[in-house]
Amino acid sequence: MARRKRPRAKSPRNSKRSNSTDRKDQADNDLTVAPVEPAPLHIDKGVLRETALERAKNRPIRERIMAFFRREKNQDYKEIIINTEALERRVAMMENGILQGFDIERLDKDRMVGAIFKGKVQNLEAGLKAAFVNIGQEKNAFLHYWDMLPGANNDPSVEIVRQNQKKTSGKDEAKSVGDIPRVFPIGSEIVVQITKAQIGSKGPRTTTNLSLPGRFLVLMPYAGQCGISRKIEDKAERKRLKRILSNLSLREGMGVIIRTAGQNKPERFFVRDLHLQMQQWDQIEAKIKTEKKPTLLYQEPDLIGLTARDFLTDDVDRVQIDNRDDYERLIDTIQRISPKSKSKVALFEEQIPIFERFNVERQIEQTFMRRVLLPSGGEIVMEETEALVSIDVNTGSHKGNRKDGKNFILQANLEAASEVARQMRLRNLGGLVIIDFIDMKNRGDQRKVTQRMKVSMAEDKAKHNILPISELGIMQISRQRHDESNSSGVYESCPYCKGRGIVKSSRAVSIEIQRVVSGVVRRIYGESGDGISLKVFLHPTALRRLRGPDASLLEKLEKNYDLKINFEASETFHMENYKIVDESTGKEIR
Image (cartoon, rainbow, N blue to C red; front, side):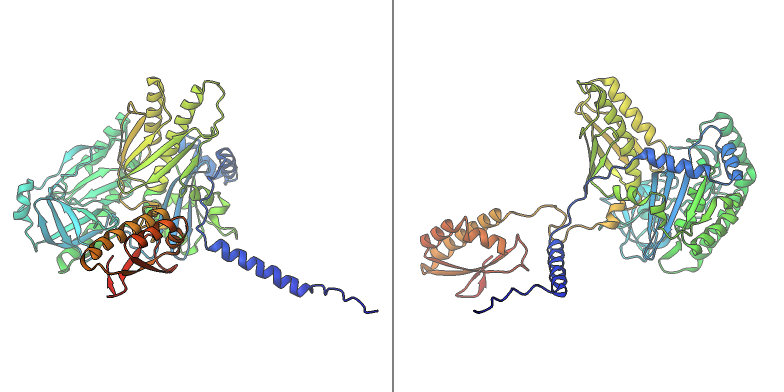
């Protein structure tokens, strides 16, 4: 009797190989499709506050005492977290653990806003009332005629309290727009400062009204006006600052503005700040005289320098930085402009990434999402387009208490107003912003939401204008933006759809091919009367449609016109593209 063979069991090695192959195939399949849009993150801000306040308690006793007297009533814990990597540097401004400001610097890209160039007028466009200036960069700078007039871009947020104009000037100056072509003819040398970086195909926007920001003062070499920021509201303090302005020793024709950071600072701080700025301007002036070609004269400091100058204010409790070279450079910079702030700066030396350690990474990740959740269960949906930013406020899975929902609608809109103001700062959104709030019939509720938006944007350094909610429930905001939004540095337009976000369906392409073939055949058939043979090159998805649901229509087309159609499909063709060739002549018809 023959013995029956048992099936050979798979060896563990073969089983592992099979599992490995399955995993590879699955990975390959996953990589062939576009990544799924991530679900909106739910970030518990209460937990963030608790962890931040715990860090505040663990500071040295001396720092806690100094912070208490520095802030008086304000007990918020403010931190600056700096992360430096191979290609970029990131700075996060935190308040009670919640991300309130975010700046990113590409280390392989120059920081252009605020840069001063010596250039040559390349062209004057009377229709645009603008000059195009060669500044030695890839694109010519755009210079509006209004920005070429002395003091034309006076800031309404500054009160002018002292004049320091030149008594006589040997140089012919433009007093009106009509003087521009005479004073600045094509080929003339000109010194300009970039106010808005190149965005897309547009060159940088510039002005001839130069300004050099310091820690407490802004020096304006050609302005001849001295003023104080209107954000300083205390009358007694403004009176003291006016006295300091009158005592400052300025060269003829120069002007200065006292920044908000100068509030309650002793006079010696302004004298020292002005001295540093004058040294800087002397270096720029020396380059203006010696350089003959369009060239860069001055560039704003990088994020380390800006942290020392602008971000590290008295109300900041702690600065954590994870790169030793940047730490030492920051300490050196602080030593020159504000030595007492050195004790706030600490080198972060833990193994865990600094942005993960302080719960920053997840909050930054949220700024690149379309949807942002609100505490009550509502959400905002943000869409950035070329013309404007549209923001829609939705109810979502709300947690309203009242059955009529009125309580929730106001609550959700108030939360949305605060979050929209925060997200605009974090994403660096600018231009026209349209917010579609949940409909509110009560005018009082609308005013509350408008007021919340104004309060939330009060600390925004970018110039902005907020209009009341319209009858359609729409709020319009204009916000100044000097540079590209943060998302534009991370994302680029889809190379397939060219930023439209949509492509034609296979049905639409099939209809278009049939329509074009029909039109072509009618013309050729009327001339020759012979049978026609065409070849169509197209994407496989369009071919499947023509050979499937539309096959009967294709047969009817061939029969009616004594026509023969051959197809050649390739995955390398674009889904919307096709080409039609007359096979008898080889001529491309479409």
